[in-house]
Amino acid sequence: MFEWSERVNLIKGLASALSYMHHDCLPPVVHQDISSKNILVDLEYKGYISDFGTTRLLKPNSSNWTSFAGTVGYTAPEFAFTLEVNEKCDVYSFGMVSLEVIMGKHPGDLISVLFSSSSSTTPSTSHDIALKDMLDHCTS
Image (cartoon, one colour):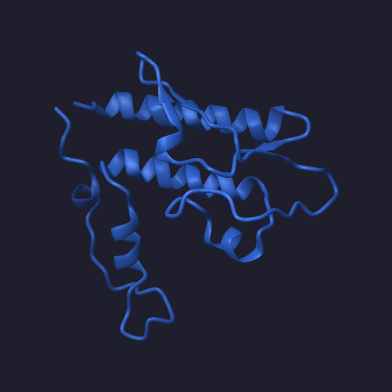
């Protein structure tokens, strides 16, 4: 079983790693592929980022463009359209991994439900989804 304290520790470890990469490294480092397959966990359930094959160093005061890199379902939608690399790409992916840890599954279905509507051009706001229904129930 994956206890809630272990899940929180994993997410805190990932947040710390991203903060280090984005704020303490010069130049800042953008991973571009934060996903569940690139997360390592130690015996205390602290999360670590692995597989730096798609990593980019951000050049200060310049545009940072690249070809598409990342895992579908974890990549920020705006990155797929602009191909401009920045820290926001990793933050979006971190959010997707965090939701996956909390929900016990990839949040793709939830996102599809939230953005479905009869007009299919704007997000629907009429969904009543309780937080307790989204949480993973496989904890002890």
